[in-house]
Amino acid sequence: MTICDCIIIGAGPAGTTAAKIIAKAGKSCIVIEKQKDFTNRKCAGAMNLIQALKFGIDPTPVFDAALQPIKGAKIYSPNGNFFEIKTEDFGYDIGGYILDRDRFDERLARDAEKAGAELVMNYLPRWAITDIDYKDGIYSLTRLLKGGEYVDISSKYLIDASGFWSVAGKKFGITSTLPYNEYHICLQYTIKTEAPWRDNEIISIFPSKNIAPFGYAWVFPLNDGDTIRVGLGMHPKAGNPREYLNDFLLRKNINGEIINTISGPIPLSKLRKTRKGNLFVVGDAGAFCDPLTGGGIINAIVSGRAAGKAVVADNPKVFDKEIKPLKRMLRRRWFARKFFYGISDTKMEKLIVKMKKRRFRSTNVDRELLKLLF
Image (cartoon, rainbow, N blue to C red; front, side, top):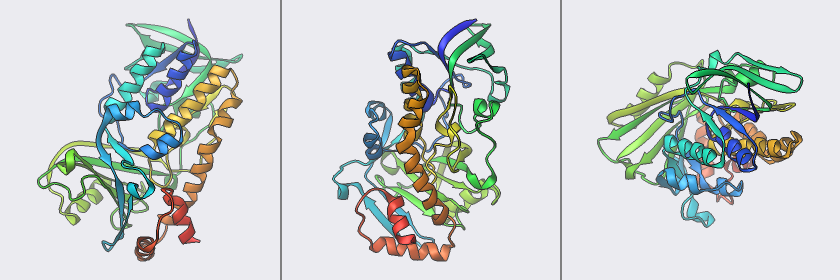
C-alpha cells in the first residue's frame, strides 16, 4: 500500500495545478491520467489572458503554448450583422491566445512533476475506475497499474479532476449525470484553408438556432488565418452535430483540408456541489465550465488551485472560501446564457443590432447582455 497526502484523478489543468501547489508545499500527491500521453486534448483552445491575469494565473505556460494572439471578437447575428469587441479599447494590446492544448497540458504536468508530484499515465479508462473506497477518513484506490505492477494507494484527500464524467464525484454521490439541457455536444474541425480566413487576430462567434441549436458556432484563426479551428456546441437532442457543422462550412464558404477532428460533451449547468468532506470536484468534473461561452481552462486552473490550497492547509473549508468569487461569476453567466441562447433568431438579430450600437464599458460581455435583456 502506497500512502500519500492526496490522490488526484485527471491530469488536465485542474488536476496538475492542484498537484503543483501540493507538491511545492512538501506534501505528497499522485496524479492519475487515463491517457498515455497529452495528444489530441478535446478543447478549442481559446484562453482569455485578461481574465486569467485578473484571477492571478501565471501566464508563462500560456505564452509557451500560444499559437495565435487574439485582439478581439466578432459576434454575428443570424443575418450577418455583427458587433465587435476590441481589446485595445480596454487598454490591452492582446486579449488572449489560441493555445496548443496538448503542449499546454503537458507543460502544466511537467511543472507539477518538477515540484515533486508523481504522475501515472495510461491508467484504466474512466469507466473502469471503480475500485475507489472511503473508510475511516481515508480514500483508497486499488489495482493501480504503476511501473508494470499493480499497487494500492490511499490518502486523506481526493481531488476529482476527471472531466465531464466526474468518476469520483458520482461514486460518492456529489455529482450525477447532467440532464440534456445542461450540457452541449461539441464538434470541431481543424482546417488547412484554401484561402486565409478574413480575420486572423479575431475570434468569430455565430449564435443561431439554424447554425447550432441553443448554442453557437465559432471560427478561431491559427497561423495568420491559413489554418482555422471551426466548430460548434449545441443541445445534444437537437440533431447531428456533424451535419450542422458541415452545413456551417457551406454557409460560410470555408474550404480546405480537415487535418484534425475532436468532439465531446461540456457541462453548462448550474454549479454542482463541488465538495464533500475531503473530496473536491474541480474543472469540468465540477461543472466549472463557463455557461455562456463553454470555456473551461481558466476555471479549471482556479478550481484546481483552490483544492490544492485546501490540501496544503489541511482544511477543506479553504476550498469553499477560495472558490466563492469564481462561483459568483459563473452564476451570473449562467443567467446570461439562459436568456441569450433561449431566444429566437429574430430576437437574436435585434439584440446583436442593439449591441452593435452600444459602447462597451468592460470586457464582461455577460453583464452587458443582462443590461440589454432586462
